[in-house]
Image (cartoon, rainbow, N blue to C red):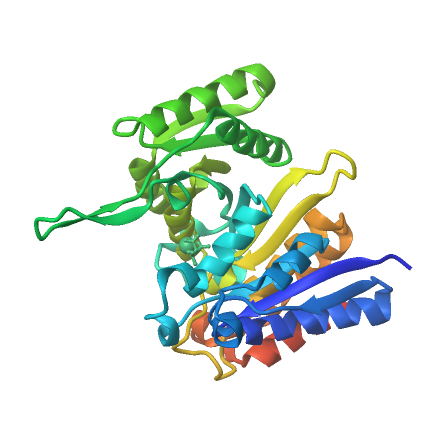
Length: 367
Ligand code: IPM
Ligand code: MG
């Protein structure tokens, strides 16, 4: 039988609840479809800090590196607001991204037809929306050095972060964006702030050169990232693939998430480069939403982003395209039935729990 190893890092807050619903899908696929998933599980974020004073242990990090794919829930919560910066919950996620070299973060924003009226934007603006944000994930201001607070000795301190990009980092992320665009509507819009930042000038140059050398069949446009944010809420359907750096990608993808009605809907895939020998990419799949400590433990969280992240895992790590399509169709079908968790509730629909949403999606998947 095929063996496909998954390493689960449910994390904090609503992470574990959402992950439980993915477990149901995995068990079903193993039992009924001989999918051959093996599951191991570790701790990340605040729960890892509580257990062993680190945001992820070296042992769990090794397991993450060895797995075919990592499924990640969410990290953080007020309980850990005062832990040292190096071991704050988010550091566990950033370490996974950096150590696994997951430079390409794919954040699709799709508006399910059934949710077109639950966005804060007008229905015609977001109906049929299908865009993909490709965010650089291992560089830029998130990791650039120096990164510190220094004492200036005159009663003042100075906080420093460093935005830095090398040619190869921009080249490889733009190549991912162009390749994905070819499987979609064949358009890429690159966003940076070349009017203010040297890293933006280089970004623009390298994207343009990569396009010219290898992807001139794809339509390329450029936009300043602030204008890009504005255009995303004005008329998001003008975009197909957006490629941008780590920090702008963080912000623009939250904006894109709200277009779809709720942060609870958006999955993401973080991919490394294909291995020279096996062709396999290291990969981590996580919802775009956070740990939502305010609603954790109540069984009301929306598990859709987590389940949709698993669908991306089927597609990108295991090439199980038919299963991924079916799982995504199951999510759409359940929304069409009028079933909703609280965050996407609207008039005339039925509000259900996290577990009920998971069960309904599994039932639709099982057909
Ligand atoms: C995200 C999150 C993370 C980020 C946090 C939790 C470190 O906001 O994945 O978008 O800033 O990248
Ligand atoms: Mg974010």
